[in-house]
Length: 494
Image (cartoon, rainbow, N blue to C red; front, top):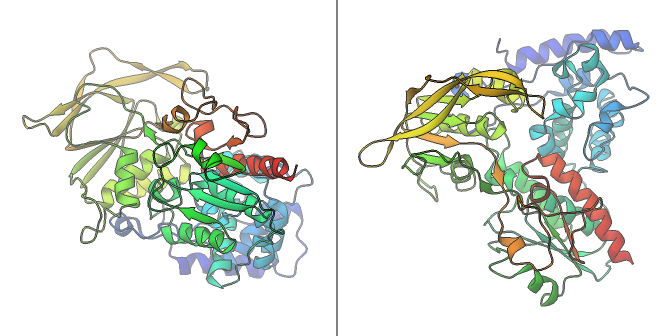
């Protein structure tokens, strides 16, 4: 993959802009405009630094990319967006250079465009429905909706043009939000807009949930997340940090003793899943959750000032192939590993991670070992990891999800030497809140059961995000938050 500088890419955009300026573009003209490549930092250098990898479009690139949009009458991209951002309308404003008007359209339905523009799996959602992408039979060739969303959000922030939504007259009603992740922050914003007094209770010492502890700095700078939280504070939202609901107080105590009229539970899925293989308790085996939390939230990469030690390893094996596995593998490089292997029991085609994350990992030198899976972690006499025993696999018939099932090849055991292993196989729900809240029903996996309005079995409690869905995405959590907030506001209005 060629690596062009931001200056080279901007010159290409300026040349394209000169061709289309002042012209009335036909759909054929729009189809002929080349997709604008996202500028990014040089791979070998960035792989050892925490700075953001993707640098964002220039204004010229954004205008050229926006002119690729066909402004389809049936607007298929909107149906692919969990919060129904009015995508063609905002892109039409970008095409005219009206960046503030564009971001204001997005903010009618999404208050976190700088975050969603960076971390949403657009190729599976809005861009997956784009007519241009479908014409080329590739979501990668679709209009770059996420990059345009990021651009206008960054432009607004960097030019001090941020405006806060209007707040309705005070209602005297109090709403408790449990968990300061994407679902909780979305509900907080929508309930504050409606004039309710909102307090967010967060177990960690910083608000932001997975956006703070899970997604690395090089993909989502923490100052951007903090900026969104500061905007909520300006809207009157209160934050109580280091407050673990179920321990500090129960949910019942919050509703009765603290006299809240409604509560939303958005505690996420923070309980890591392990492989349950021999040797998994050796020193040097981590859940991706713990590894990333130490590095991100506790800034473990800043060894002089960090609030936590980081386990130093030269050869790290990462098990899994989702976005979290990519984050953990790329973080291991930045924490000093000389070699990082991602072990996955299927092939590249079946990887659930975003295409951009896989490409960035490959550019940075992450090694992928497909059709392999650990069956044992090997240890030294003093209990440290010295390697992983793996089996080789081949692909059989597709499973229920349509992905081909991996089938172990008998007698194919082999060892990979390493001194650390990170398990990135997803997370389950922490049972604490459900166990300490009588009348709150959950399924056998610990996911809180809700109806179509996100209301739970408990009269005054709604829930959404990963605690309901299992591990999902920031935007899906926000979509559930919007539904819950609308239902809470309607309930309190009665």
